[in-house]
Image 1 (cartoon, rainbow, N blue to C red):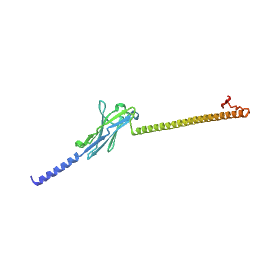
Image 2 (cartoon, helix red, strand yellow):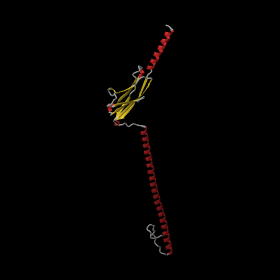
Image 3 (tube, rainbow, N blue to C red):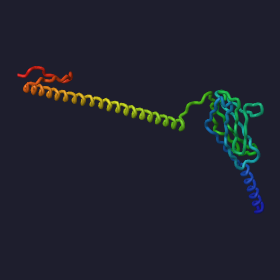
Image 4 (tube, helix red, strand yellow):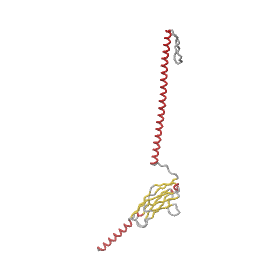
Length: 232
């Protein structure tokens, strides 16, 4: 084999390898959210997928299908259908109108470039589990936790404030009672001391007037002790 034939074969092999690698380098990746939910009152549910494609020839085809509780269904978006698909360069959005609880299922997005023979020119997402609910579930969110903490602190503040003013009112009442009791006891002691001194004074005047022969004036005071017995 001469050198010219060998070099020609090498050039042809290089061209075929280059062309094959150019066609076979198409790579597609599809990503989906694992979970999504919608309420019946919203009437519409949305499921989306993101995709990337590199070095892929021709036009892409995006398709959707879903797994329900016991059936498999390929979705056919179109006019008059409940399923609508909007595609752009990176995202495909599936809209389900007039949703019903039976629309709950796993929705899978797929992407393919038919003009490429490479196995990586087609891919499907991992699927999005769509749940259709009649009423929203009560979930513990940071907002709910913050509201619970705020309500708890407000309740504790009200209890502390009520306890403080109750204690203050009881303390004032106790001091008032103690003040009245102390005034009564002091008044009683003053009255008893005055009565004793008046009785002593009356007895003294009585003895003094008997010795001097003068009649003893009677002190008319019902609250003063009167000694009416003669002294020996």
